[in-house]
Length: 310
Image 1 (tube, rainbow, N blue to C red):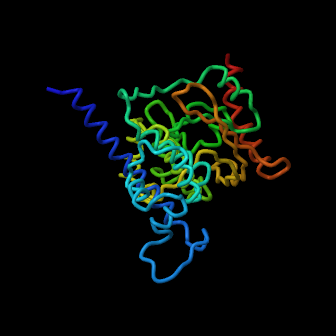
Image 2: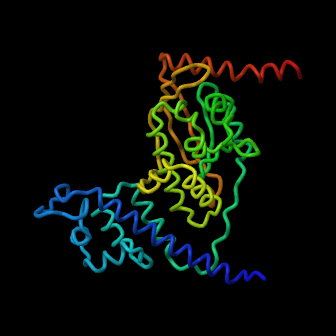
Image 3: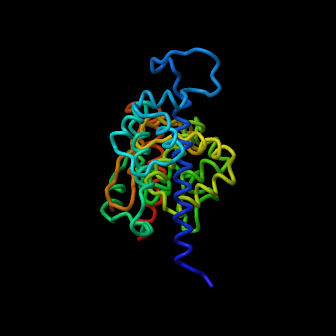
C-alpha cells in the first residue's frame, strides 16, 4: 500500500539534496571562471584548482572561509540578501546569474507546506489575435519549458523544420529544446547550432531555478540528459540566461539563408506561469527581408485558399 505522506517527505528530502547540489556546482563553476588577476589578488606558486580558491572568494565577500565553504556545500537556507549580494559581487555574477542564485536560495528555505503543482495556462484569446495581426514578423509564445504554445502563421512557416519534426508531441506542440538536441536536422536549420543550443540550455537552467518543483521540467531535463551527450555537457556548465535577444542565422528549406533579429519579452499571464513573446524580423532592405516576405506570402496561401473555399 502506498504511503502518500511518506512519499511527500521523501520527495522533499530529495529536492533539498538536489538544491544543495545545484548550489554547490553553480558556485564552484562561477569561481572557476575568475582568475586572481581579474580581482586584483596576488598570484604565487602552483595552483591546484582553476580560478579562485574558496578562501579568496571569502576574502572578497567579507566572510570567513569556513562560512563560505559551508555556503558552497549548499547550506544556503537562511542566508541574508546582503551576504548573497556580497558573494554575487565577489564572483562577478551578471544580473541573470544573480537572479538564479537568489532563486536557489529561495528554494532552499523550509516550506510550510508542500508546493502546489504548477498548472499549464492557456494563452488568452487576445494574445493569439495579437500574434495573428503581426504580418511581417514571425511571432510566437513559449513557456519556461521551451514549449511553443502559440504562433502566427509566419512563425510556424519559419520554424517548419521544428513543427514537422518527430520531436513534436502528440498534440503537435513543438519543444525548442527537444528539437535542438534530439533532431539531427536542427544542425542544418540553425546555422550556428552551438550558440543557439547553449542559449536554450541556459534558459532551461534559469527556469529550473525558478521552478525547482516542476516535474514536467525535470522530466524534460532528464530525457535530454539521457539522450544527448551535447546537452549533458552544456547543462554541466551551469550557464544561465533569462533575457535574450540578438541575431540568429537560419537555413530555411524553402527560402534559403536568413539573418534575423530576434527579441523576447515577458508576457504576463499568471503569477505561476512564465510565458515569453518572441519576434523574429529582418533588417529593412536586406536580402533576408525579401526572403522573409516570400515566406510570409507562402504561409498566407493556405489560409487564402481556405477562405475562398468558405
